[in-house]
Image (cartoon, rainbow, N blue to C red; front, top):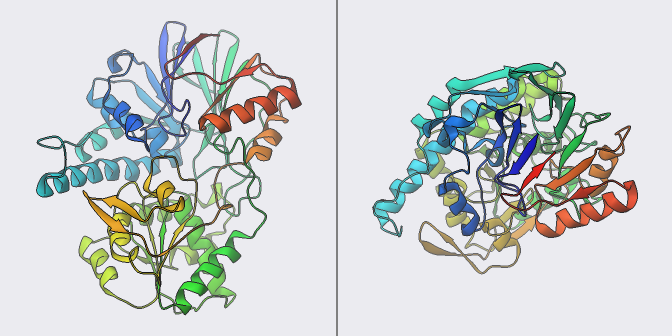
Amino acid sequence: MRIQFLGATGTVTGSKYLLHAGGAQILVDCGLFQGYKQLRLRNWSPLPVPPAEVDAVVLTHAHLDHSGYLPLLVRQGFRGKIYCSAATYDLCKILLPDSGHLQEEDAAFANRHGFSKHAPALPLYTEDDAHHALKYFSPLEFGKPSDIVDAITAELHPAGHILGAAIVTIRHDKRSITFSGDLGRADDPIMPAPTRIARTDYLLVESTYGNRLHGNADPMEVLGEHIRATIARGGVVVIPAFAVGRAQELLYYIYQLKQAGSIPASLPVYLDSPMAGDATRIYHRHHAEHKLTQALSRAVCQGAVLVNAVADSMEIDRKQQPKVIISASGMATGGRVLHHLKAFAPDHRNTILFAGYQAGGTRGAAMLAGADTIKIHGGYVQVRAVVAQIDNLSAHADCNGIMDWLAGFEEAPKETFIVHGEADAADALRRRIQEELKWNCRVPEYLEQVEL
């Protein structure tokens, strides 16, 4: 076995790991780089391996930093199968076409307004590319080893991060390597705790929160406080939120706040993301894979106005009464939330409330750092609204949660690779693993190859 790290090294995006085993080449995750421009430019660079020579792809979950490069991989010649859980496949059916559509929209907008350095500006891939890529998906059952390439098996176990998220173990010739994917939280209100893994020869573990702990405050109460304070000012709460996972958790908390009378039952709540609306319905369909009952899942789904049409989205901005708008994307990197930021960020009565990790180089990170202006669609928007964050709403395990999951191994892996984290977070987790567990571990470099 040999592994090459094609992404998620020194950053939390672009997850791609090329595994060579038994003459086959398997790509575990196939994500987009996001954040800093120098990272995003990697999306346009050719992979070190021709896509036509990749035999199979295995996805840990559907978030675009793990799946969003797939349409380009297929367009460039990949013809193998893409393995993942059934729920991940359902989510990719909405995430990938939406990603292609947004890229086409952004390119068209840039061309209309002439702010791109390229003439014409082009999308990385199109909605049609995404639909074509979906033809190569092949869902797997959790807990059942499945043949994916000659004498190579993959086994998925629930990771608890979002619906369908998996810990992936690949085996060949009595050797095994496990990819944690993104690990969920043991106390998540919707998703179950990550599955314990007893043993593996090699391990890749994420380190998004490798140097941080989640806060002790109840996220539902913090959310309620921000909503009540904003309503008192006559303002609007805009919540940039990941369409899959975070949006559903926010709807759950808002439902509970209304039921408890902590916020007005009549307060308008808009889920302004067709993708998030579709994802919410998928959560309801796969109710056996999370903690919510069918009845509660249905009630949460009905707790917001689902906005599909662009005209209806624009109408939300024209209505001046207090309201809550949940809209993708979670780091304010694209999508309809940008139009809501243009409409509401300049007004001090409003609140821009971030509900998750903000990678360096994103608008979310800049706003939380106190930026007075943000660049949107080639122009600058004043930020006078209150900018806040719910620190402990992340769907990732914090550093103690990661260490607790690692403690479930019955024996140490031969080597553990710390991935999917900013440099300081990855190195902090490396030190903890070496000092507390006495494991052999390291933080790999971008494009580094390691013989296993």
